[in-house]
Amino acid sequence: MSHSKLLVASLAATLFSTSLFAGDDDLSEAAVKERTKPVGSVYIAGAEPVKAGGARSGADVYGASCIACHGAGVMGAPKPGNADDWAPRKEQGFDVLLEHAINGFKAMPAKGSCMDCSDDEIKAAIEHMLEGV
Image (cartoon, rainbow, N blue to C red):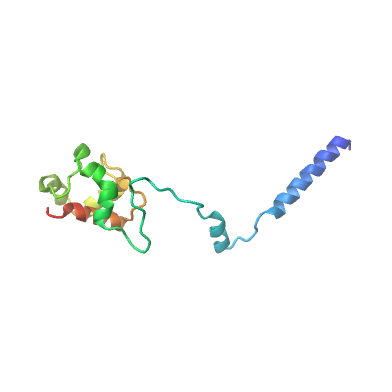
């Protein structure tokens, strides 16, 4: 074997053996979660951070996400407290209304683009918008 081939083979063997032993081989659930946990988070200016220990209120979700379209009735979004806007939606029943809000419907994106909102928080936001209707 020539000197250059021997050098390449030696280098390849070194890299291969190093890669086998360099990583953490603990595959327990806790170890994997620790190695793959997020290293940071994103904060969008003007958005309220998720409060630890509980769901956000309907008013909080509305104010952080829903108001952008529902506040002005953008593309037919029903405005809070406006009985005429909500009447045809209420006729379909609350379950259909909730399903549309969670999964998206027509111009409304799923969860109104509040992807960190739970289904219960979306429900609370709808209930908030329906107050007085």
